Image 1: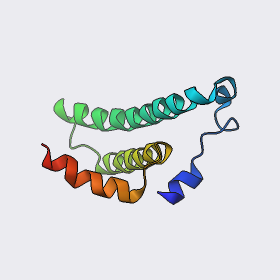
Image 2: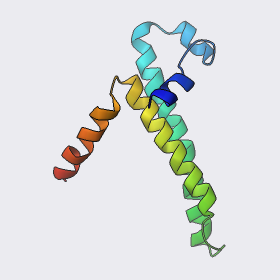
Image 3: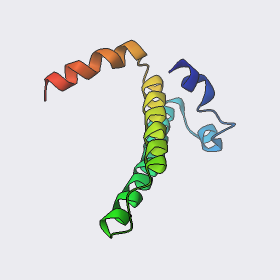
Image 4: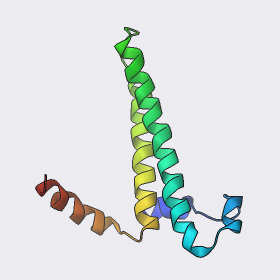
Length: 100
């Protein structure tokens, strides 16, 4: 998580639109941008599955694996932006699973 947080930084240099946003809107930007990246990954998985449904062979596992890793990266980046630690996530998983 620390590696991801230090590698991917929401700054005006990487995201020029942030310069126009007040501090209160920066979190909304980070959440939205994370969702966009996760959606891109989901789209790649969906494309593989949709092609399979039409009889075009098995989904390309390499594409699905890469998209899965990218979703994890973006999930961890979003958690970091929300101030969550790896310990927070580790504790939350079993708690949320118990409630289902």
